[in-house]
Image 1 (cartoon, helix red, strand yellow):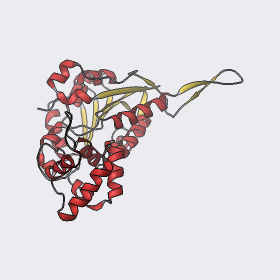
Image 2 (cartoon, one colour; image 1 turned 90 degrees about the vertical axis):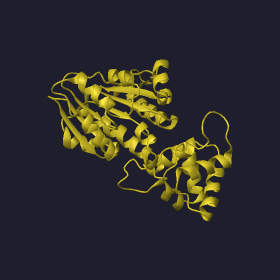
Image 3 (cartoon, one colour; image 1 turned 90 degrees about the horizontal axis):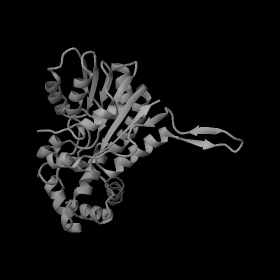
Image 4 (tube, one colour; image 1 turned 45 degrees about the vertical axis):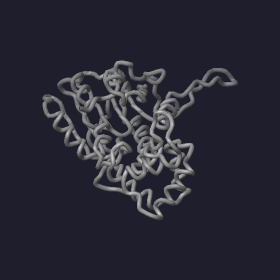
Length: 306
């Protein structure tokens, strides 16, 4: 069963109001969306966006019992949130949620190729109907390009060694399964500590294949642009890289007051202007972690448009 991470904390941060307009840009299996609709009640509008067609089909089933609400499910990228909402809810929105990273159902399906713990085709596409697979990505990049990806998106300290090992291995035999890649990384860097040595490599390839960082940056700026005054934007991250991007983006829009030499103050920052709802990242409680270990690395940040 899929358990939504930081459910109460996230929907609390959105301050859902009766009959509001909300966007779940990473709908998944609609765990957060259901809670938004429950709190919003009759007259609430929800736009759910996801790249995963299977997730959208399952979400439609999970949300079909709601009456008196408007639900629009869109097969698309959250990076296109401004354009999508311009069509669906042109007058702006009261709240936006992004729950980033790979979902538990995706990890649990070997054929999706996200997990190094389940052997399957090396795919990793959020939208399995289009785009380059991770196997094709690994086969087409130079050693230097692979090292750059592992370093930038996985923050992998052994990026050069792993990239070199990948290039050597693929010359003898195509790397086509998650098991092949996981075993190769483990043989290259060894195994120590509680995390599998291929964790960062799989993260980096997943992010590269799905352009997750580019999508995130577009979603943050696009989402802020469509918020109504008083509207809130909540983002859940699971990696230090994505959390840092969210933190920096929100901080830039919070801005700061600068003292002027001639007297007085001037606000400096990115538009539109927001105020922080969470002063620091909100993390899961011990009770939640015991029930849902995936929540251990989750961080929630939220802002309100002023």
